[in-house]
Image (spheres, rainbow, N blue to C red):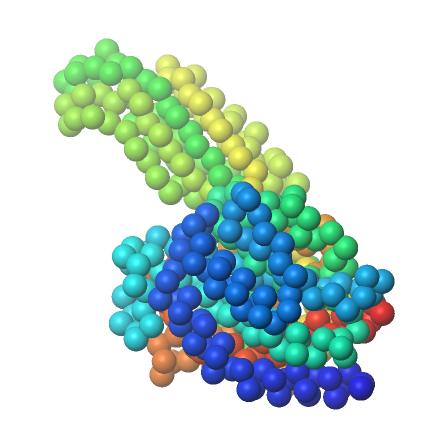
Length: 399
């Protein structure tokens, strides 16, 4: 059986199971689980995969799992990854399958990622004897956590023996029936920081007797914003954003302690490594001049997501066959959001692409991390077909 015939058979299987995959996605959407708590999701996924003949590897540390379909120990292996966790957001879509968990919803599309991967797994397993290599599915927890769940999966061997990897993400900025791709750097690194400013309390009517931590903090905030606008090459995008500021006890007391937390995003490793020192020098200079002290903690998080050009070529070629060339869109510019799929790409060749999910009539064009976010179910079949076709094409090239 040649590759074209095999793809046609797998696509026919996907068409046959599509309604079931939509139902699975709805079930996952109704029962979302936060990072580190994906128990229902894991056991639902595990049951479906075991019924399809996969060998399952579980963890004692988390709810992620690896499912392997082995054709031959000497054959190449391709991995497909899906993240499973939800977000602490109260859903407001009013859809029949809306979240039943108060304050938790799939506001980033991970339910659709998991359902698509399950569809791929079922379809590929039905044609195991004709596959040109091995397939491994990585069902990952905690993508939304600050640490990212991919590192734990990698540490436990998820990539051992894997030659290449593909991943996708629901994308409400493209229409259903379209995908977006990007060569090279696709997404930014995602670091976090905290700053504590220590002053001296005093009566609000006698500020000269204290050291106003709020005033010092305001000067730090202003200085940090100047780093991007005046100290970073404008040809290398960077973002320094403060998400929280906490301080003060009463309206008539000079504040003696403020805590700030924020994030830094870059798409250039040199800029990324330079920013912490720039921040520290600004904070130290202001605190010293104002009589305050400080603690500065900077934590490097997920690196830039950098696609492999040859792997992107595979996705683009297969997507054009499925969707038509006009619906396969070069995104051109990277985005400053982070994604821990980047950790896999640091270790093996791979490609990450955007799956269009926008359908105005179904109200699925709302951005991620929004209480009204939803995915167009019609997009699932396209995700399954492009992922399975890309996996087959990669295995044939490696065989």
